[in-house]
Amino acid sequence: NNGIVRPKGYNVSWHVNPELEKHHFGHSHPMKPWRLTLAKSLIMSYGMHAAMDTYFSRRATNEEMRDFHTEDYLDYLRTAIPAPPDDEVPGRFNLGGSDCPIFEGLFDYCSMYSGASLDAARKLCNHESDIAVNWSGGLHHAKKSEASGFCYANDIVLAILQMLRTFPRVLYIDIDVHHGDGVEEAFWSTDRVMTLSFHKYDGMNFFPGTGELERTGPETEGNAGAHHALNVPLMDGINDQQYQSLFETIVGKCVAKFRPEAIVLQCGADSLAGDRLGRFNLQVQGHGQCVAFCKSLNIPLMLVGGGGYTPRNVARAWAHETSIAIGCEKTLNPIIPEHTPYRSHFRHDTIFPTLEQILGEPRANKNTKKRLDEIVCMITEQLRFCET
Ligand code: ZL4
Ligand code: CA
Ligand code: ZN
Image 1 (spheres, helix red, strand yellow):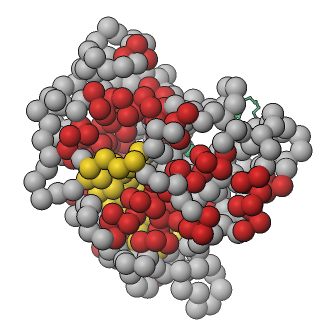
Image 2 (tube, rainbow, N blue to C red; image 1 turned 180 degrees about the horizontal axis):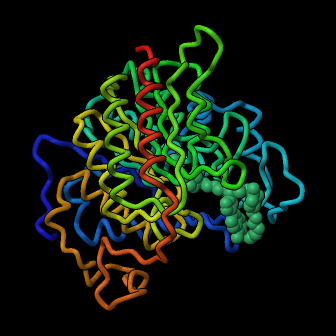
């Protein structure tokens, strides 16, 4: 198995559910649960599962989902009748449009990815895992009683609520190209969760239209959540070097100030170059460096997926990030193993596809050094006001 060994005294748990991967959002919808099958096949053909504890996760119960979501919303999610998406009439709870269609098995799908994140959270709480991984989670836009942007149940909020029973403070970091608005909103008024999202921001021209640098929490006097919601709004085409420097500087400062007992990292892969919906220019290497940096902090860490709309690149990134979690990234064969099922999917460019090389027209980089320095300055200033 490529000489992959279980790290000594260090536990990584991988939470999967093959049933979940079979769901379809409908013809030509960008969100494809099947990308998880592709990622899993890559992870397993490298033999990485030998170095982790693999768990087939159970579904979240209704009661568990009610920790965040309202009963009437869950009732509707459970009983809604599948129908072709209708973009003209936004249905109840924002369901039934082309972003959040009502498809066959919708509630099963939601309870499966939520259950996997809850399982991962519990492994961290009882210290059975140092890193817990759920690539099917990370659905950061869902609100307490509203679906939004391909997200129906917010597994991240559910997992963090679980973690708050054990850990006094949790840091949430989001590298999906979209703003993590649902998680930010859920913890807007508490000082026990700091949220930090990196995303493309262009006002209402890019979904969801929130996540500006200046809004860092409630402004009403004495609200505990003040200065605990940080945002890093970026422009098209940001590269690995710029992103890494921003990420390490800002996350470093947040950890120093907030002193979290656990970290949840949403690893949305739509921030990679060549993504169908994204606008950034990150490579697998740069995206993965965020995982490596979080791991180096030696704080219980949960990794969840999120966006990612060019399946072969999503699979590459999450396989690479799994290898970082178990610490075998330096010894992996750069060429994707011959026997990988679906290997043809990775052969768009060459006969010897590699794990790290992704295809994609480079996008013009609109991020100036001046603006990025300004962002770091602003965040440093905001953190000075953050009371812990
Ligand atoms: C599609 O091709 O900006 C949905 C969505 C379905 C199939 C055919 C229908 C064609 C792109 C997107 C019509 C689609 C019109 N199909 C969609 C304001 C919008 C209203 C809906 O990564 N139309 C809404 C949501 C974003 C909007 C991004 C990111 C999730 C995450 C975490 C969510 N919604 C305009 C768009 C297609 C589709 C093609 C699409 N939707 C692109 N961006 C959006 O952060 C998982
Ligand atoms: Ca983000
Ligand atoms: Zn996204």
